[in-house]
Structure formats: C-alpha cells, structure tokens
Image 1: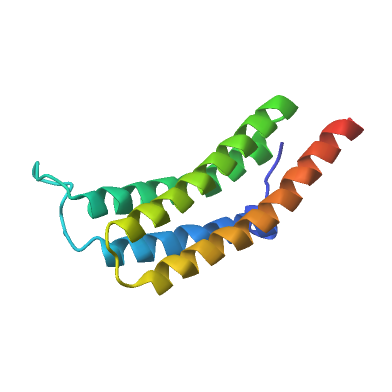
Image 2: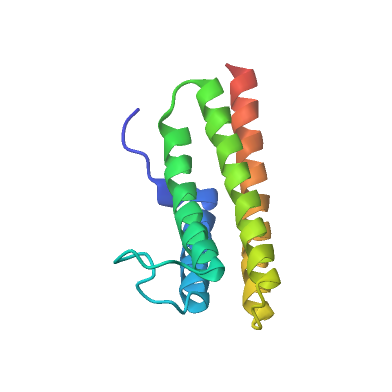
Length: 135
C-alpha cells in the first residue's frame, strides 16, 4: 500500500488531540498514583481514568488499520470499532461525573473534543463508504 502520511488526515489529527486530552484529564482525575502497580486495589475513578487512557489510545491505531486495510468490509469494521470507542469515552465522562468529580468543566472540554472528533470522523467514514461504492 506504500507509505501513508497519517498526519495529513484531519481525522487522524483529531484523534491525536482527543488522545492527548483524554490522557491529561485522566491523569488529573486519577489522584491515586501507582494504583495499577504492586497489587494495590484501584478506586472507581482510577479504573475509569485508566480505561479512558486505554480507549483513547486505540483510536489512532484503528485509523491506521483502516488506511492499511484493502478490504472494504475490514475498513468498515474498524470504523465501527472507532465509533464504539468514542461512545465508551462519553460513558467514562458520565462515570467520572457521577463519581463526584468537581471539575466538570474538564469533562465538558473532553466532551466537546469528542464532538469535534466525531464530526471529522463522520466525514471520513462517508468518504470510505463512497470509495467502496465507486469500486
């Protein structure tokens, strides 16, 4: 397939921004440092924060997989996976809010970043579908 410049894709750039913001917010809310080491039990907030970081990191790699896959069904399957991940991230925001996070403006920033990513993602996914129909 050749070398693909992922950074030229707006959806990829948005996914990196979403990943970075998710990581920063998760670290801010996860006050229990080292909670996943030495067999310590994690609190709910730390578990949600860890899931937030993990899921947000999956999006750029899923976009890369879509670009590398030659199969149209494989592309659409990975695109569906990305949609599910963004829905999960929104659920993590709700979970952090229900866990009693006082700084809701950070969660609202993350939600706004997700909406921005989703707009870019929908356009990109439509281009995948139209490319599939043209082949």
